[in-house]
Every structure is written in structure tokens, then in C-alpha cells.
View (cartoon, rainbow, N blue to C red):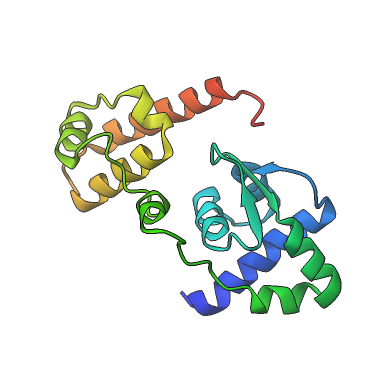
Length: 169
């Protein structure tokens, strides 16, 4: 994939969606639904890296266009703002761990044992950093987790997330 071309295109698509209603908060799922072929996790990563454009809520569930970004777009235009927008480097080293989503709730060994047993704790499925670590551990250990077990874990996670927030607010 040509990431150098694809990332600015996705940023423009995200900005266009928010310029329709600049003050509105959208969940990553809603935004992915409005952008054909987009993935909520990719949009989340883009929004985190371009914090000068997007404002993410504390619970990592929704985002909106940053007020300064709206002003820049109105003054300079969408293309100029999207071209000049650069990823924001982490401000402090203690934030770096959080921004990289390094999870210390469970060790990789614990996760692997849980995946082999097909019994991942529900709080790990709902916590974003834990879920990313679970996916990474599964990816690093191909064949260690049965495909049917993984499907069941993903189904359970979807059920828990929908039950936790049935209207995707």
C-alpha cells in the first residue's frame, strides 16, 4: 500500500465528515460507517497521531474536529490544512507509554494462556489497551489460538461492547 498517499486521503475524508457538522462528536464506528472502506481502529490511530486536527474524548470512544483545525480550514481551505497537518509528537515520556498503548494490566503469558483456554476476562475485552495487546499476542503466536475460539472471543467482545453502550453514544 502507498501509505504516503493513503493517509492524507483518509485525513481529508475524516475532515470532510466533520465539516458537515463541526461541533458534533462521532464515535469511531460512526465515522467509519460514513467513510466507505474505513476501519474504526485505523481512524482511531490517525486521530491520535493528528491531535492538532482531532479532539478525542477521555474514554477514547468519540472524537470531533479540533476548534483550531476548523479555523485553519476556514481560513486556508481543506487541502492546504490537510497537507500542512503533521503528526503530533508525544509531549512527555510518561505520555509515550499511554500513546503507544502499552498495557500493564495483563502479561503476554497470561493473555496467551487465556486465549488457549478461550476464556479472556470481560474487562480485558472492553479495555482498549488490553484488547490491542490481546490482538498483538494472537498475531505473534499464529496457530496457538483456534480460529473458532478466536471467533467466539470476538463475538463476546462485540456483545459486551454493545451491551455497555447500546446506542453507540
